Image (cartoon, rainbow, N blue to C red; front, side, top):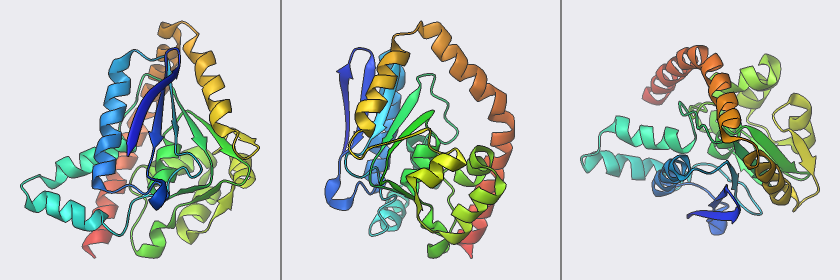
Length: 239
């Protein structure tokens, strides 16, 4: 489901490849994605692009995810370890030194939007759609968005996204600052790879230093926010 390749020198490409489910992530998919990020971190790559093809991701696979998590816990896996895999997959609490560029086409919902929100540069096709629909299902976007999104696009816009669960187009998300560039449909991956190749050609120490400095500069307040996010999520799920 998760494919890692090297389409250009020192550039890794992480592809969510489950088109029949619009790249919905079941627990195995989250774990594979977490493993892919670990592989990228150890690869010496200068940059990485994450994409899903015609759709970025429809989020967690609600048809199986809860049952998968419950089964993993019944099988002896501690709940904390299961959620650690999910959060690593979404790059929550994880600051990769390797810059990550998202190439977003089609739908980018739920956990897919949470993953996109953890990347450094975001390129979207003009018809791409974004949504955090968790509130409609009775829970919150606890993969990082509650903590991170208000810092990225401002309080009113973030609250509109999270409280309504509505869908927003690429141009609206660009205007809010969530997306860096909007390109013609089908062109997001090519543009993302061009940017990744440009970044990978710069001195690695400078590139990684920028990422590390920025990550450390916001980590303290984000950690506090993540703690609150986890507590409230547990309260909501506990009902």
